[in-house]
Image (cartoon, rainbow over all chains, first blue to last red; front, side):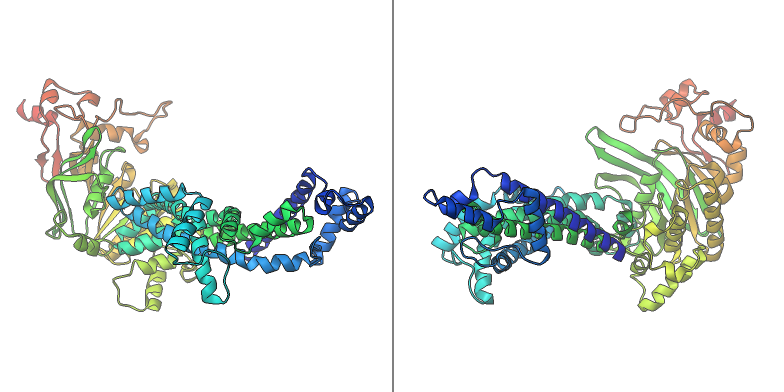
Length: 312
Length: 326
């Protein structure tokens, strides 16, 4: 197990390195001189040259990359071009808002999705199963930004059950502000996870070991909940791990619609202003988040499935 | 002495399918006495698995019990409630399934699975575990206490099948159903498993219903044999009688085709030409007619009944009648 974890960690670092390097090069391939955009059309050439030097943009690209990694290893993501604040501070100030949103979304969508899928699989081809299927498919088909806007309109504006914008102060207020955005980006996941669990459950329920468990008179509830579900949720764990990437992108919509602070909003704002250090910093943290979550999913899988520990 | 434990009485089982009813079992009658080992032989698709799942009532949802009874200790299992069936499964009737590689739950330790199947016992967890370890020792798993902490994939196929046998015998059942327990294993392991079964049978005095298509194993292990073909019993009787004096052409061909019986080197192994009839659309008359080289006119029109030829020897073939009348 420890060996598995070490190898998985090394792989994560490699993935992170490649992803960040590609990102670094891509952002510099975006057309338009960042210095001109930042300073506007009336800036003097001296001013432009000064900023170019400050950003290190006069250096060859490989040297820029080396400097970037050198700083990164010291925990320095650079400084915000406009405010002069440390990018590390800015990113880590925004990170908790995105994390709580994503975590809340996964928590409710996975719980409901697994329950719905397992229930449907335990009663295949019944009315319940068909209703669950209809619900799941319509959930999957609902894009996060549409759900976000509708939820805002219905629950915040008309019914006024939940606050419309911001992230709130203090635990309960923040939780209150989380409900609508988490609902919006988690909804399609409920359907997706339910479909996945149902298919996976039906497959496992047909396997010989389930028949063995039944042939020993083990209670049906235990057969479904322990003998089958523990195997059936393995693919769900992987999908949720990879799904962090999608959730990060849907979080951008939710953060814009609900005017929430967060990484997504930070990335969008800094891209429009060509604020390179901030873009790089927030993308780096998002990538790290994604890499960590897939690694975590693999580790959880290895904990749940003894075969996975030795297979890799 | 010959107290009846399991009686299968004129059992007819269909599967409802899109093409109409598949007549998987037709008029099956035989019994298993206390402490007796009965073998069931037949090709794949002859209804062996349907029979076993019917006894345990672990059948697919499209199964229909049309006629007949399955009596276990005088109780009709087809009329029993789901609750009563669950009480029988894994306590009075146990089963060892065919494929040892798939039979255990892959994500739970062997110890956990052996604990779970003792769900009826009021013993403490420690006592249950030591009982499990004792059973593993009895089937020849070395170092059973440590092995209880391992997962199925850490055992070889032969070991997993021995674990399955240990699990099935743990409740000291009256009837052990063994569904081709050695088919997935190689020949050396097969002998080991069979010897182990014999020893355990002597120790626990349970009856065994042993399903196999390996005649050598049946001859070695069983007291009586039931030969099935296309969902019906074609012949049944004492092992010695069936092997030395088969009264149905199908049984004769099965014995001829058994590699263990072939004395001369042959380039091509003998087979029974033809195919098993379509169970959804059965022809009239004898079901083995199309593949039988001794078929007569009568075989095409009338179904031969399973007649008693002598004490304990039954066969369903018109040839035996021809002998009797001529």
